[in-house]
Image (cartoon, rainbow, N blue to C red; front, side):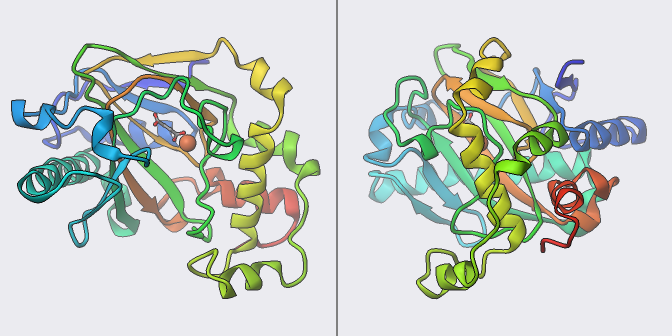
Length: 291
Ligand code: SIN
Ligand code: FE
């Protein structure tokens, strides 16, 4: 069974039939990647000038907060900063319109988080193993506990030379979780409170966040697991868009440069099938509540 589900939509928003909305929601929650081959995010000639690794200096990405317009991780200054803010702001609005059209049942429980521009080539980037996203993993944020909320991301390949972004997509979450669960150590007494006290985390890390981080690390550190999916590649062409729950879909980005990304949080209560949430799957394995 393919993990990729094509969606024909070619506009950022607009009207989508109820059947298509239900299919898209169901596909996402069963761990598929929604692939929109015809949904291109257009850039102006002036904006294309931002598609160079020189705009990020030492960081990987330019980050943008749609709630207050702040930009981080860029060397761009003055006039150009407004233009860059305009580009990321437009992507933030477009992805919001897209999700309202395609996934309207999430409306009461979805929150827009950060937007990013990723102008650096993924292949051959030198990185610690933990930050190395060319290794299969599920997403979990070390400093920002989710407390069970889902991580839903929209990606758009804006490569100006027509190059694809190539991912690997692994197996369903339940299978990954079941395999690694016996190797994930429990939190130590006082550990999660201490991390918050010394501000490693922005709030107290839930048991759920603890286990998701351990799972992320265990996957990246297991060479046999990585080798099993060496050929499970998926190319997302320039001018295409894709959407998935990155806390659920085992994924790796192995090559490509110039991508826009928007993160959303989705509350477990807003899902059609709450049992598909990593929170519920891990709670099943732990035999207790984790958040
Ligand atoms: C990731 O979330 O692992 C990276 C995805 C990408 O940048 O294509
Ligand atoms: Fe990731």
